[in-house]
Structure formats: C-alpha cells, structure tokens
Amino acid sequence: MRVLVCVKRVPAPGAKINITDDGQAVDATNLGHTMSPHEECALELAVQLVEAHGGESHVLTLGVAEADEQCRWAASIGITKATLVDVGTMGWDPQRTATALIEAIRSIEEADGTFDVIIFGNESADTGGFQVGIRTARVLDRPMVNAIKGVSISEDGTVLEAQREIDSGMEVYHLPLPCAIGVKEGITWPRYPTMRGRLAAKKLAVDVTGSEAAPGGQTMVRLNRPEEQVSETIILGEGAAAAPAVVELLKELGLWS
Amino acid sequence: MVMSVLVVVEHDRGAMADASLESFAFARSIADQLGEHVEALLIGAAAADLAGVCAAHGATACHLVPAADDYGPELYGAVVSAAAGQLSPSGIVACGTDRGNEVLAHAAAELGMPFVANCLEVKTADEWEMTRVQWGGSLNEEARLASSMPMVSVAPHAVEADEVSPGATATVSELSVEVPEWVRRSVIQDRVVLSEGLSLATAPIVIGGGWGVGSAEGFDVLEALAAKLGGVVGCSRAVTNNGWRPHSDQVGQTGTRIAPQLYIACGISGAIQHCVGAKAAKKILAINTDPAANMVVKADYAVIGDLFEVLPAIEQS
Image 1 (tube, each protein chain N blue to C red):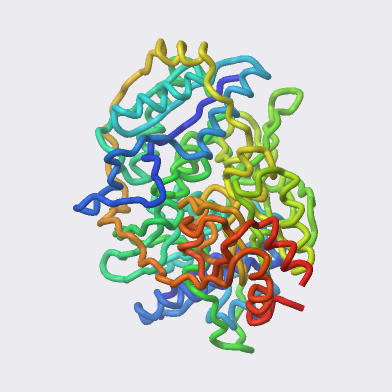
Image 2 (spheres, helix red, strand yellow; image 1 turned 120 degrees about the vertical axis):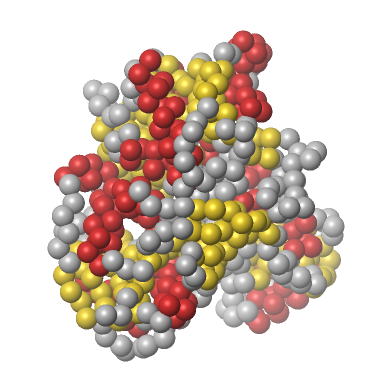
C-alpha cells in the first residue's frame, strides 16, 4: 500500500498570537514551528497503514525551505520518503496550493506508482481554508471525504471504510481505492520518535521541487486580532464557600432547577 | 429579473442543522447590500418539508433537487455546481460546518472557482471583501475574492439566526440537475449511533476539566455535577493527551466547538487553542487555584479554589 500525507508548516503559538507590523503574517520571532495536530495524526495513520499492509509512506509539503524540518519530523516517526515544494513563502492561496500539490503528486506517482491513500489534515492550523485536500483529490479523481476519525481497509484491499464523527455517533463511508481523506485529531495516537527514527530523519533525502502555479481568486489583505471581549472577571468567592454564589448565578441564568 | 443569493441548506435526512439558520441571516446581509432576494437550495426529497423554515428565515423561493437519497460530499458538491449553472446566483452561502465547508469545496473544485471558508462579514463590491477567521478564531483575516460567482461559508456563531418572516411561505420548485454516476461513490453507507440525547456541541451547560483534574477518576466530580445540572462533560487537550478522556470530549480548535449558556472550566489553564473552542459560550465560569490563569482572566466569573472542594459543594447545594 502506498500512502501519501500532506502537511503544512505553521508557527507554534503560545498564549497569544502576534502579528507582524505589516499585518501580512504571524510574528514567528522566538516561536518554534510545527504542523496541525490533525496532520500529526495523519502521519501516524500512514505509518500504521504501511505497518499493517506493507508498502511505502511519503510526506509532501509546500512552503518555505525550512519546512524541511516537518519532513524530517515525519521521517522520525516512520515516514520513508519526502517531497518539499519550495515556493519561498507560506502565503499561497488554496487554489494555487492545490495546483502545485497536484503537479507534485503526479510527478511522484509517475516515478513510484499511484498512491492508494492520500491523507490530508481536516484543515490547516493557520489559514483554515477547508479545501486544499478536496481540490487536489477532485483533479486527481480520488473519492474524498473530510472530517474522518476512523479508518479500516477491507479484507480484499479494495475499499477504505471511513468513519466520521457526528453529534450522536458515526457516519460510515466506503471509498474505493485509490482514495483521499481529510482526518481529524483523535484518529490515531501519534508516537514519539525513537532513537532509530531520529537517525532515519537525519539521513532522509528530501526531494525539493518548485512550482509555477498561477494564483487563485482569494487574496489576503491583512491579518487583525479580533477585538477582545474585555470583561472584568467577577470573583464569586474562594473554595467551597463560593458554592452559594455559584448556585445564585445558575439560578440567574435559568440553569438551576 | 431580480438576482438572488443562494443558500445551500444543511440537513440530515430532513432534519435541518441549526447552523444552517445562521447562513440565512448571513445571506440576507449580503442580499440586502445587493438589493436581491435570498433563495434556498434543498438537496434530497426529505428536505422538501424544510421550505417553511427557509421562508420564515427570509427565503423567497426554494429549489428542490430530489435525486439524492442520502448525503455524500461529492454528490452534494456536484448538485450545487450543477444548480449554480442553472440558477446563476450572484453568490452561494453555506454554513461553516464539516458538511457545509466540504460541499462548497467540492463544488468550487468542480467549477474551478475560489471558495472562502468561515467568513464573519462580507462587503459586496466589484470584488467581495470579507473578514474571515484564521487560527480557529484567534485571528481575523481581511480578504478579497475575485469571482463571477462568489462562494462563501459563514463561521459558526458569527451571526445569529433570525426568523424574519414567521409564517411566510416560499415557492418550491423542483430543479432537475444531471450529475455523473461516480459522485455517488462517497455517499454515506451506514450510521452508528453511539449516544442519544445531549451532545457537547449543543448542551446548555458544559463542564470542562483540564490538567488540574489530575486523572481519569478525577472527572467523577465533574460527571456528578453535570448529571445534576443536565450538562455534558468536556475536557482540554492536556486531558486527551494523557488518555484520561476520549478525544470526542475535547473542546478546542481541533476538537469540538461548544456554545453553551454556561461553560464551567475547571482546572483549565486556558491555552489559546482551547479558548477558541469555547468562544461561543454565552458565559464562562472558571474554577482554578491560580487566579492568574488565562482561563480565569478570560472568564466572566471565577471561583478561586480547588475544584475537588468547589464542585461537590455546588452539587450538594
């Protein structure tokens, strides 16, 4: 089974996200970088699928040269191949990003064979466009369902059964392979890199390419911090002695019967 | 002919999603700027009964596409793109839910058009200008959209649903659209019911526990109070990472977005990713030993103290 995971490098914010003076990006000074928890789980899923069914796992990312770090993280938990589409910025719009990913996937598949499963995070941690995976899958003619929190492969290896969490339970989808899915955190429990994994990460040969994809129709003008709802916190009391005040509050809100 | 803004109605086998009502209010705010009507797209025969609700929320006409038995992202996306071709709306609006975003993304991919997810506000001009959420709601983005038929989803809880015309009726006309057979490959095959009743996303009270709860067993006091108040227990990412609660209980950017009347956050420090998941809560009560915790600072009310003393005291009141 050949499995591809697409990930996006993003800053790892602390308690507050700062914006650069020109409003064009998150101020990542003094911040480390990471990927969405959805994508960490996607990498783990790819490793597990290859452990269970044999084959090869591959990570693909688009952005700046430093995204090499995310490729090596993927390798440290067991992904064996990596491609980085270096476009010199993290700011490409969703249509442009999808076009570049499609080019890259076609080129990898020409050399190594079709991916049985392409895994995306449900949405990126930063821009949250909710579409790059779907656009990519559509052009590559792979069935695609987002928001997946459980998968299994049919015994004959032709169908991926995917579960999507809803309020009351799960929806079940049967996607014929090759297919694509967008996954949510919780689908797997990402492992920590082992010493062997760290060595593999150091040795990983990251294939770096570029892209001439044309911009799409969505343009970012600038980022703003939403107006903080400034509310003076009302201290109802300390310890168990505050219970009557909490009950009063619940009554006031009509939540005490 | 008056043009219209088309709302893609979200429903599950005829049961309308609450978020879909918000998309009508959002679509009206756009249609008002353009001097246009709002119309509804109902996909699946089971949605026929929703015409009245659509009319009450401002739709002047409903277009029903019966030929879809159940939900499938590629099927719905193909129906939206085909319907858009026939109706030529001046814009398409859906709710920013798993389904709403997914359906517009599939339709946009099919049409080769842009789609902007999770908008808070739209100003119409030659190019639509919008404010949308980034970082799960921690930041706002001002964006421009160049498209002959703008497609947008509205961020959950960005606007309030508004029944503008109670008792109104809308014309319902069947729309015959052709979709290729392959789009049915991703239609729902089965459903597994895991729980009945209250859910984290819809509960009027959510009692959340964080690192300060200390263990899986520690959640017993939260469960006890939730049972008394008719609430649901949630948790922070620190808790699921420790395996104390299943991920389905996680409140936050990559978990469930909650919108209760009251969120009682117990022993939760208040990481930014957690706070955006609780942003739509009407009121927040933080219970924490640390008066400087971010959750306490962000809360409307706070009790400073040990949750294992405070919660039983409330429960036994």
